[in-house]
Length: 188
Image 1 (cartoon, one colour):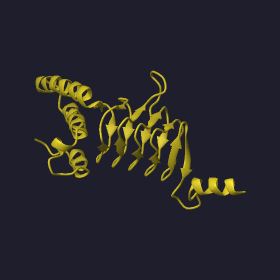
Image 2 (image 1 turned 30 degrees about the vertical axis):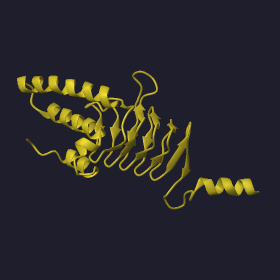
Image 3 (image 1 turned 90 degrees about the vertical axis):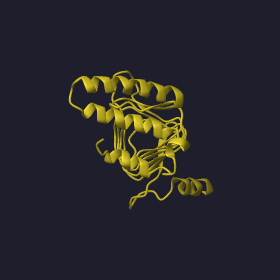
Image 4 (image 1 turned 30 degrees about the horizontal axis):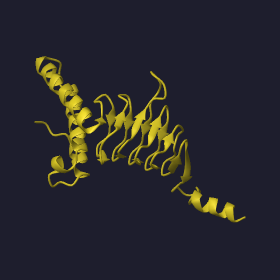
């Protein structure tokens, strides 16, 4: 078996004591990485047979755990899914390294055949966050629970709401906290 550094990075983000017994999401990530390794094989009978087993495993994990990570999506190393269920990614999505998803996350297009999101490195999505259309989430940004992201989110920013709006930025010269600004406006 060949070494898969992306899978090894995924595993490092999980509790290493029996992750397959403690975390349902690790099964979905394993099937995703396995599917990517199959696609990298040369064409032939062994690849066709492996594809058959991949599709069975993919559908089983998708149905039992409610996590759909199609192998056509490009997901960087170190993916962590907290909890499980109702997580769906479009097959063309690009997700950077070290990203975190929580239950109920959807990342996809706004209309059939439309463009899909690109997530930078170390992006965190809260429970039931929806990221839709041709948006880019910058490195290190965070999206709050139940937010609907329809526009770009700059690196290091935090976005919340439906539709999501940026409430905080960590880069110099940016908002320190929109909540403190809102508080100041309320006081005047």
